[in-house]
Image (cartoon, rainbow, N blue to C red):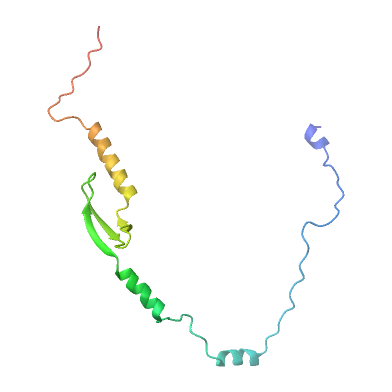
Length: 128
């Protein structure tokens, strides 16, 4: 007989159940009259449109942004920017600064790995 089958689990007294049972809700018997009444009532619109002054002010504020195209110095690519004229902060930029940095890094790595034009690789003589 192996050691595993000879071991029995420790018996502990259970004081209470860890989860309390929930009483099931009473079933509702809907009559055909209830369905007919519900079908006769008009539904409210799912979406409401607010054309108040606050909505117009938000539209005007978004129209105040200035758009510009600039050329990135590191990657020499065109960049589209939406700038807040009040603070001068860039609100939206495509491609993002992270993408531009990654491209500049990739181009620099590729330039270092590429052989220089006119340079001929000569095999190393390992015979001494």
